Amino acid sequence: MIVRRFTSHRSTRLTSEGLQFLFFTMAVGIAAINTGNNLFYLLLSMMLSIILVSGIVAEYCLRGLEFHRHLPDVLFANELATATLVVKNRKTRFPSISLNLFDVCDGQDIDRGLIIRELSPGASTLLSYPLVAARRGQLRLDGVRVTTSFPFGLFLKKAYFPVQGEVVVCPEIRPLADEILQDLLAAGQEHTAHRKGYGSDLYNLRLYQAGDDSRAIHWVTTARTSKLTIRETEAESQRRASIYLSLQAPESHGTEFEEAVTYTASLVHHLAIRGYHLQLTTDSSRSSFGQGNAHRFDLLRMLAFCEQREPHADIRPETEWFTEPQDTENSGALIVVRPWHGAEVPRSAGPALLIDPETFLGATYAM
Image (cartoon, rainbow, N blue to C red; front, side, top):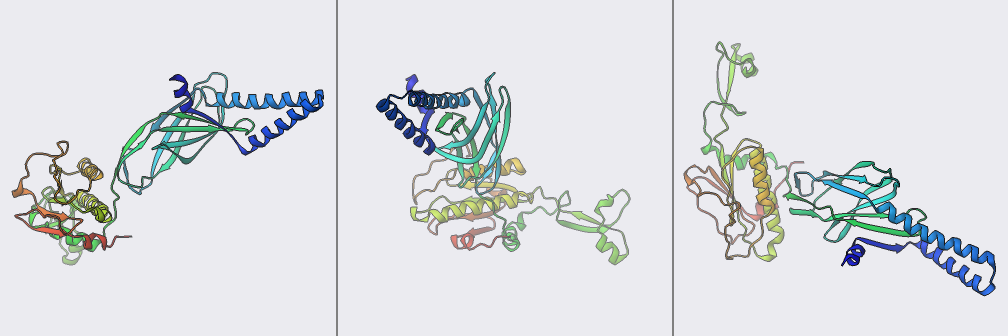
């Protein structure tokens, strides 16, 4: 068991230079045996010593290494992020030289371009590299593969270090064009509480009164009327919208389903940064209404793990995301995104906006 575990974490293979050197060694050995010349025996012993020393030194370069991985708290599909890897040489006498590092994911070595020329005994170094996730879901990195061909380049020595790392990959966020956002926001105007408060939209213009904040002066109107005018903003705390994503789609509609998830994530992102109270509902989960960055990331994590379901399949609620019964009287506007025309659409007492595949597949995105 110990031997099997050691061999699974260690491997050695000949390089092209090492293969040529081995052939020359065999040729010198044959010449020494055939001729009995002491010089050939001396040369043979030197070449064998080089092979032995090469294996021992390479093994010592890979021993005593310690790794710590740091990943971002959350990733977005197809968006560049930065990951870091801390490498420490715990040996007290010998350095580690000429190391190449690879991420191991699903048994595959991924080259990040990480190279350590020399790591002194007891020293550590921090390596940063770009990380891009191609698809949403859970990104799991199993470990780190370290290779070295030091000192003579005859052998490529590999060592595997189990350094696990997991991060949630949210769907890609695309910048929606202004005309699309205006159409989407229009569905929720009836559920906006038009009252004075802290916000960004205009609520009212009135004359300046003693004690008013000078930062609220509306200079355009003041210049036109020659009267000091105050701009009152509309409270955004009551903007509410409920987004429903249907998970039902035939297997042939995989592309449409992924585009629907991406479009829904973009809606969540753009409405959330505008101060909306949002609720996200799918066929198997439902969030509570909320506002702010923490709630926005919770909704995006929900979308990260959405799975396509066959039509009319038995879908059980996921207790992790399913909350208390929905308050239909105060749910705001309903935005329904469905990847397939045959998917059922929930009923709504208020205004509703239906987004079909033609809408999000042909959507224009801001550049």
